[in-house]
Image 1 (cartoon, one colour):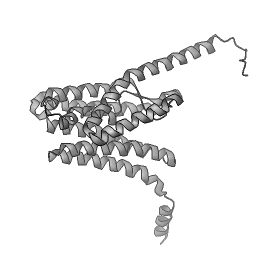
Image 2: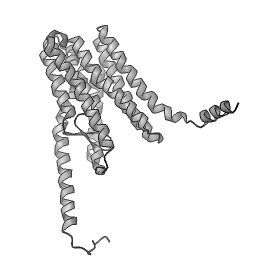
Image 3: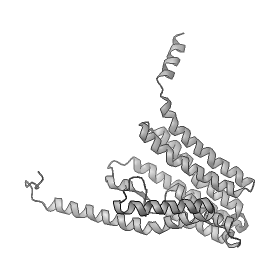
Image 4: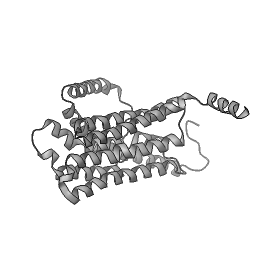
Length: 272
C-alpha cells in the first residue's frame, strides 16, 4: 500500500511539460527513420520530405525546452542521437540507394564520410558545452561549421535538382559523392555560420526581408524542389558574410581587451 502511494505521488509530481521537447525529438527521429523506409521503396521525393519534417521538429524541440524551462542533459543527449541518425545517416543512405550504389566502392566510401563527419561534429559540439570557460555571449549568433540539418539538406541538393531537371547529371555518382564529401567537410570545419537564432535585422531591412521571404515562399509553393535548391544556394552564399561578420566581432573584442589592458591601474572610466 505504501509503495502504491509513493508511485502515485511520483506521478503527480512529474510535469507533462517536460515530455513535450522529448516528444518533438522522437517525432524527428521517427521522420528520419521513415525517410529510410521511403528510400528502400524508391520513393525518394517522400524521403526528402521526411528529412525536411525531421529538420522542422529538430528546430522546435530545443526552443520549446528553453521556453518551458525544462532543458535537461537527457534531452540534449537524445537530440544529439536523433541528429546523427536524421541528418547524418539518413541523407547518406538515401543518396546511396538513389545514385551512389552505381559508384561501387568509391560510392560507399563517400557514403561513409558523411555520417562520420556528422558524428565528429556532434561530439565536438557536446564537448564544447562542458567547457570550463564560457564563450562570449555574441558567439551564440554563430555555429561552428555548417549545422547538421542544413548539411543534410545541402547534401541532398543533387537529388532534389533531379526531381525537376530532365538531365541525368544530377544523379551521377561523382556529383552526389562530391556533394557529400564537400558538405561533410563544411560540417566539421571551423567556419562560423549564422545561426539565425539571436540575430537582429536592422530596421531599414525589415521590409525588404519580408518581401524576400514572401518571394521564397512563392517559389516553394509553385516549384518546391527548385525553391529548396535556391535556399541551399543562398545559404552557401551567406557563409562568406558570416565569416567576415565573425572576424569583425573578434577584432572588436581584441581591441576592447587591449584598451582595458592599457588603462592605468586605479583610474576610472567616465561612466564610473
